Image 1 (cartoon, rainbow, N blue to C red):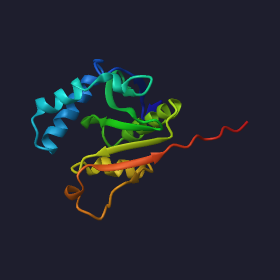
Image 2 (image 1 turned 30 degrees about the vertical axis):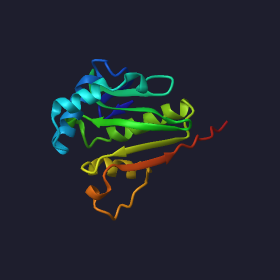
Image 3 (image 1 turned 135 degrees about the vertical axis):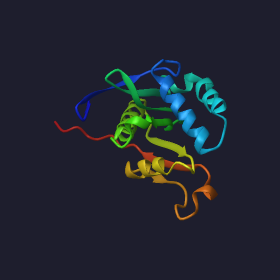
Image 4 (image 1 turned 90 degrees about the vertical axis):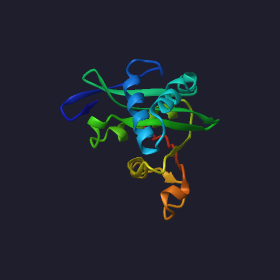
Length: 169
């Protein structure tokens, strides 16, 4: 996979993999500044969450690696029998506006379909307009009234039904 002139590699990792740590650390920092919560609290919540939720057979944690550096990632876990819940979608600040978030979403969707899920559900925060724009651009359906002020809505839920594409002979 290529983005620009650099080589992107998709790796499936565990929550405690060294490739995941810088992304989780940056995500914790982002959450702590946007939502005015202590960094340590956010980082601990991200790194001590039961990692098996994001592991096979019901989940996955994917990292995009470019020239050996983790640049974006995301995860899913089982929400219900037919639904995967996306979590921790993140692009490192130095690598934004290159379509990496869309690549992560597409990779997670394929992996979820391979695990038998037919629907994806997620929530994003009210202070994350970039994430809202990403999900809308990737054909996710908003499960909230977008005419209401973001802070009134609280967490913004989305869904997307996964459709297997028929292969031609």
